[in-house]
Image (cartoon, rainbow, N blue to C red; front, side, top):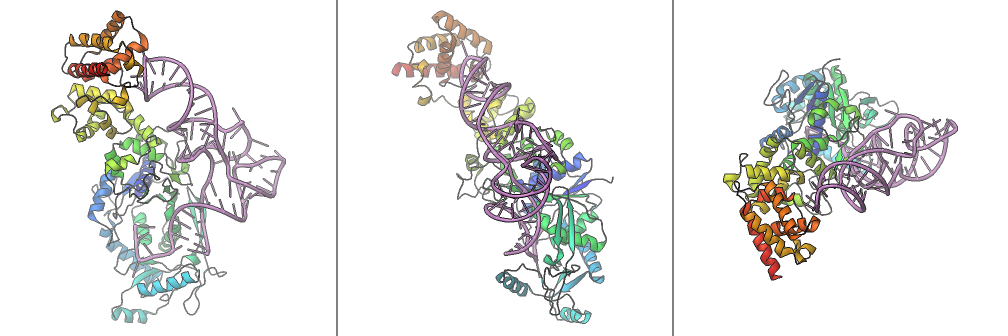
Length: 535
RNA sequence: GUCCCCUUCGUCUAGCGGUUAGGACUCGGGAUUUUCAUUCCCGCAACAGGGGUUCGAUUCCCCUAGGGGACGCCA
């Protein structure tokens, strides 16, 4: 079998969002799974909407996600150029060929005229199909109109469509249509009637190729074997098939995967989840987790595995296992975010609309915990810096206390960004929170003061090991306090926890206090003791 | 309006004529962790509805309802 070649072909008219990213992922994974090639092509033939800035945003997002394209912008390849705006001469060459063969023809209908006719059809409750007015213009008429300077488009002459003398077509008239059959790996066999398609534009009046035409020429020339894209493109496919047939080219394998919908069951739009991919990066999701989550949207592994590394996905992925039904991108609380444009809000605000217990978060936590220590530290450092809580001089991978804290806290993190919820406790002055202790049975026990005082005396005798305390020594101290006071078990432990940290939950105590360091622990003990005395 | 597609626990999904309809996230309960989290058990929770076909339908066909998408000189 010939080489599998897939492509992702974004148009640089905005940022990359989950829908597009997942399509890119599927193309990338399929190419890798089949030991084929993954190609990136930029479809920037919409002059009005394509921007350089958007191009860079899309490229940045793809790089963050880690989809290495074998051919495309920046890396080149044998079938370039890979930006459609640089392929105009190619489209021109092929469209002229179609016109010469009478498979396409110039159309002089104005946009206004077409718009009017379209509205008429709509008013009558009929589907809009081009009426074929310019279909049979003679060579003289064409030459004349061109000479008069009329703008024109090039339309594809859709085969076997009925037209009457006036050029008005009757869709659905018996014998007037041809069936186009699309064999789709995901959708199965889907049939379309050409009468409902009509003669469509392949070259716009500005001379640029239209999507349906450019995509065919490029996919053919770039030897794309599998076209994997959203179902939204399915209804365009018969037009493309018609073009392949007109050129006598072999059609690629089609795979139209389900669309991703938001929590309101509507196609992802700016208001719900069409958040830029970069926002998830900025929130502190790792690309590994995000890819894992996206892979599960519409695809499942044969053995039911859900936590997967990208390498595992590269061997397991098969577009044939993709689901036809839409998958919900269910990570934002849309009820809460009503009236809010999630694509516009700050990262901080965006975070408040995230479901805290989403599957994405769970997967993210799993991936964070699976990351090796050095990589984890490297990845989380920028988020640590962003909190501005840790002194810059200590904010590096060589700082043992910092890395110790980060590694201990890792298990709590769903995103790297959540580190900001934990750092203040270790770096900022102790500020006891009343609700953490007032109603605690341990705080209200008469032994609280004596136990805390005894513990404090033992801590005072300890050596301050470079801003950290020795966990073993703390463990011994706890036991000694208990022995002397004749208290053991939970009351002992919880009392000392509360007295030395001001709270009832947290890391394993010896580790916790060790990381806090002598000065901070003593400070907490003093404050808690006086709080108790004042109560 | 026309065409196309979709419909299994709240969510992601497995299933491809015979299963106690499975797994994961969430949720509830329990165990371990002298705290929280983790981990480990247990549990709650689904085949949209109606007709067929069949000895037998979640699975195949039709209809209804609901949802989505496409009907551009946008991709």
